[in-house]
Length: 174
Image 1 (cartoon, rainbow, N blue to C red):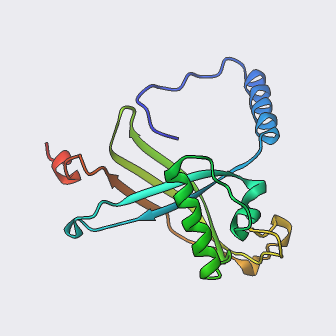
Image 2 (tube, one colour):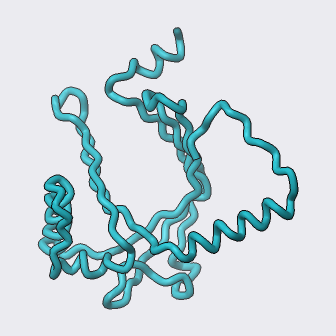
Image 3 (cartoon, one colour):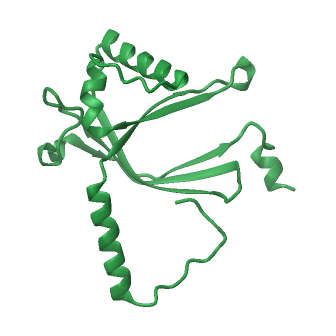
C-alpha cells in the first residue's frame, strides 16, 4: 500500500463490501501466481557506481525449470534476457538452492507523484528454514515445523531516498 492524502471512502454496506472482497479473493485464486526474480546491487556514493535493481516476472509454475537452466526463457528483451542468463548461471555454478524464506507484512509510504523519499515498515517479520524436496523451490505450508520458524521480535523501518532528491535531513529542516 502506498500512502495517499486522499481519505478512504467508508463502505455503504458491510454485506456488499464482504461480497466484493470474496469476489476479489476468488479472482486472485484463478490467476496464475507470478514470482519476481530480482537482483539488487548497492554501491556507496564514493564508488562512483550507481546502485541498480533489476527484476523480471516469471510464472510460479516455471521457477523450477528456470532454476535448472535447461530451458531458454528469453523474451526478446535484451536486458531481461541477460539478467535471466546471469541468474541461471549463478544458481548452476554456485550450486545454490533455497535455504531461508522471509515473510512479513509491509506498509509502504510515499507521496503519490514523487518517489524522492520512501518509507517502508516491515511488521511480523519471520524467517523460515526451507527444506525443499526435489523439483520444488519452496517448502509447502504443511511441512513447516515450529523449529523451522524464527520470529523476529522487532519491526524494521527503511527510509529510501532517490539519488535526485535532497538528503532527508535537508527536507526535514526546510
